[in-house]
Length: 195
Ligand code: AP5
Ligand code: MG
Image (spheres, rainbow, N blue to C red):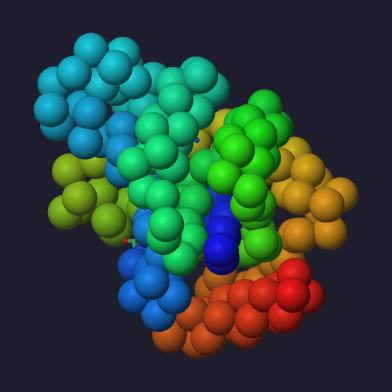
């Protein structure tokens, strides 16, 4: 299986690149942010609880997102692989993901980080906020809070994969198709290495 973690701060382009990658490699896209927004749209209790944190730019509890990923892995067996987008976002989530994948005799192939500076992230998210309706895109303070949450809690996840020799980073600024090509070449290198 090809199991990718697409990593990077809010607005780095994880969702944009995932859409292209799932077509090329025939993968299942698992975005915990999208899954949580579906729960909110459906008005579930989980969604209502998550919304309070998401609207403040804060992470939801680990067990909530780990449970959602667990369900999705169980629902999607015999597939070519997965793209994890916006997950894992803490070291305990990364540990849980390794454990879950081991039940299916598989593992993460590679983590690819999209590197984008804070100024560009803010610019992109404020622009998207004009049409997305995402409350967490609505103002600059909230966007900065999301970036701070990423810097405080999520950046250690890169070290977690680096220790497994599975971390790689690329420049996430520039033309979307060129970034996509750079990601694909990283995937092909990693797949060759994994054998
Ligand atoms: P989530 O939905 O994951 O949001 P995020 O990480 O904040 O990232 P975004 O979806 O905003 O950005 P993206 O990297 O996907 O970029 P995109 O492609 O859209 O999480 C939302 C919330 O849910 C969290 O704050 C948290 O509360 C909760 N949550 C989710 N997962 C969780 C977890 N695992 N644990 C705990 N809590 C969790 O691009 C952004 C914009 O830029 C778009 O408008 C796009 O068109 C544009 N763009 C993309 N690429 C380029 C480019 N190369 N040049 C110019 N513009 C570009
Ligand atoms: Mg996204």
